[in-house]
Length: 231
Image 1 (cartoon, rainbow, N blue to C red):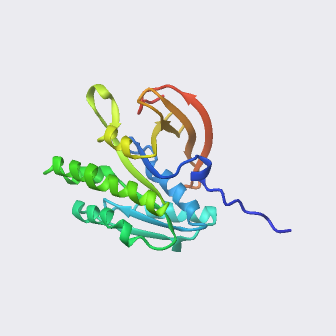
Image 2 (image 1 turned 180 degrees about the horizontal axis):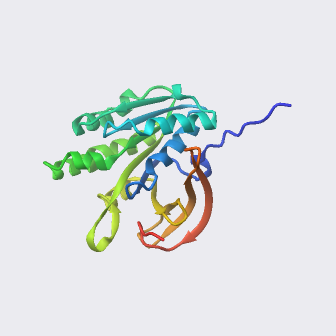
Image 3 (image 1 turned 90 degrees about the horizontal axis):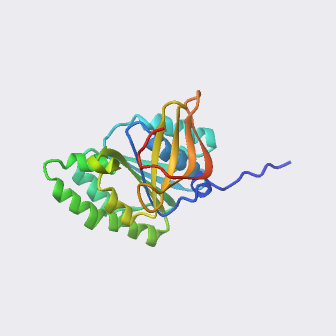
């Protein structure tokens, strides 16, 4: 008997495609969630991963998850960068440099780029909105790939916890996803932001199992709660 292996990926199950903004507090599981999505993609196509802080701690998780889902580590190309100018050039040059067979790009994270630009924050903000985001949206339309941007939430005074430049980024992306850590249940809720901070839909739950591999459980239940709120 031949077992039929499903070709439906986690991203398809959660109805995530196009340009995706994945954000939340530090430690909420953004990179692990991106690793989970990328790992399933490696079963059938290639992934381009751009890391902006030159930290390699995510790589063992990525390899472990790829192995657990039967993917191929050879289908992942990781570029480590620590200079905002280098990352900016990588993003702006993606359309011409993208390898054949790549269906997912991960940029982890946009917030690191903003932090690198503290000496000239206005300039980088303009670069992000006038160059990077339109370029990425254009790649999605032209190449038909999925792109994940991760970023950390920050305290925005009366606005609460939001991703840096959240309102502007939301205008460009197809899916605005916030990860909300629930320390009491040792899990993270995956929330789709619909119209505004008070309007969210839970699409899944992320848990890190004892074997060190995250598990994502798809879910469809509508809730109303401020973005970045904790239970």
